[in-house]
Length: 358
Image (cartoon, rainbow, N blue to C red; front, side):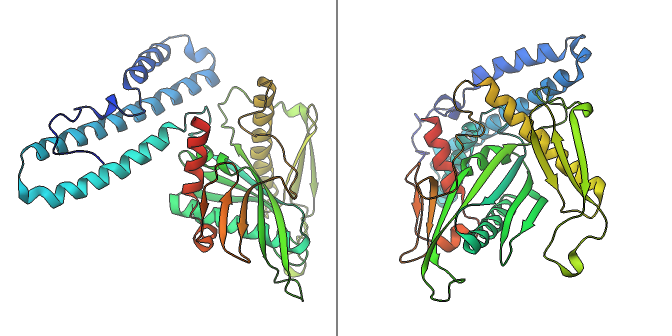
């Protein structure tokens, strides 16, 4: 809690925050010089990446300077010692504390792709029909979380389950820091509950694998796709049957011949839309591959692959015999399982980011 009535309180919040303003301003000067180089635009991809980095840095500095001014204004009011301002100042202190916590979390999102959009994929693991239902529950959970944060979402590809739920889904998440937050979710998620698909109503354990990739923007120089390296197949979409079955071949499968990466999209009725979506996924996977190749150790973008089975989970969701959601990496846990499944995930993500920072 900030001590607003203490006149010795530091006049600059930046002096004790995790944000290093002098260093950021030094970076701003260097980037500005680069942006003014007349030869910069000889390489348009590189130039666009520099301009984006410059814009993001300016926004970041502006945000912290505005917050510093808010602190200074509040301190000035506090030092007046007017008792009638007490309740208003206390409310402002709470608001400032909450804002500071949010800004400090933002400083933990300093990875190269943390500010950008994300591609989230959910695949079923062990557990049969229950696992497919669990994958659908996770899909809903993440869509609700995105709604809470004001992120837009687009289902790029989805394969329905045989009896219930889904086998897999790929979702494009668009919004500031979407990848930075969602990268905390990659790994195996485990559900323990009384199965609604078991006639004996016994307890079942189900698994699903969540993969999160940064979406590769067109100007990213890391990913260059040569059309000659692509094998594109068109086929009829598969579905649950009935009126939803596509009579025309609109589904698209793209194979990147040099790497062997295969992606497919069949969610849209337009072949062109499915092709565009497949290319988005392919670019993200190629970016991920490039990052892994650049790192001789485990890639920070993807993490070690884990098979979706017993003992490999990063988080457990227990609905029976008690209720608890626990992250096994951070030990962060919550008893309100309903809230978590409705998208209340910020606590888990922030705990992960703080752990990675330490």
